Image (cartoon, rainbow, N blue to C red):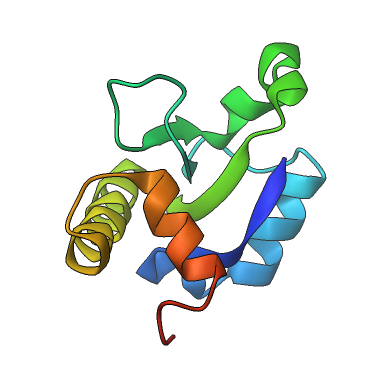
Length: 110
């Protein structure tokens, strides 16, 4: 797993940020923790996975970029919506690649 420098956190997850991140690194996070990643195919804007999915050998080999962490599926949907909304407002498109590039080059004030 690769952690995004400007990691997005859901409201509930933010309250336990350190312990959730630590439990993900140690592969001990429960099934109520979800991660948001760039899409695995060209048909999606973002992907949402239960963190336990990332512990499978197939996903470990992919070394996914973790953009966001949420506590519960509903919070994951809300967080993904916030990311997509910000992406569209800042780039005028639904391109995660352009959005991440703009954030990395300082095109956005945090």
